[in-house]
Length: 268
Image 1 (cartoon, rainbow, N blue to C red):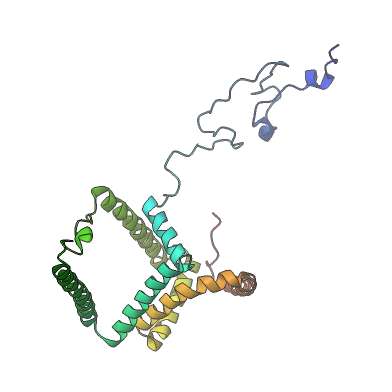
Image 2 (tube, rainbow, N blue to C red):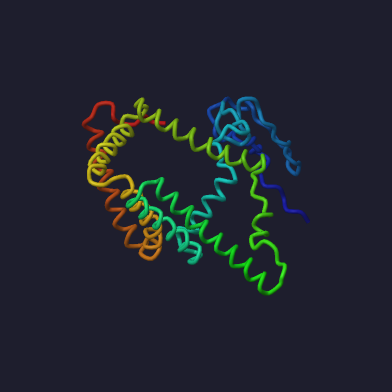
């Protein structure tokens, strides 16, 4: 025998989705009664209200209205840079790091023109010497191996239209975001951010008086290849100290915002 129906099932009709948010409406207004055992009608999106959003008058967001995602080439470049900075391939990272250090140390001693000329002469000396050595070896051994750099000469190095478009889109994304951020800072869209940027520029004047551009670039390269590894090994301690510093800075910024009129952020 089937169990008798619950009296509450007969007294309480099934409300439509979202009706619990609008309990102040009149009795019986915009309510849908669904017989027991029947499937509810499929939900349709009303104009001006997102399906299941629970808020009246919310317009569904159109496709493409969200923040622009970076192109795939940017994500691939970022992944390769992360692998280098975290020394996941020690040989490859060592070559890149050593090349950067050699180039920067050379620029500190010589001019850019001299460094480029010396590098070109070194490369030409190596390739010409190897070409002459292989030619002499082929003449002595009576072999016909051909040009020693034949495989590299036949290698395709031209960029396709699709590759150029991908790199152009990536560059356009970074340039546009940088220009918008600079406009926001210089035109004081947010007073607090503009003040922070002004303090940063003021500190950079003292840094520029102590170091030149090449020294700063050398320090930046060394920090890029060392700090990520140190952070991974001592993450707990570093996060603890960074949390203390962040708390102190937030307290100081809050005091400054309280004293400066109009420095408080507008509620978004």
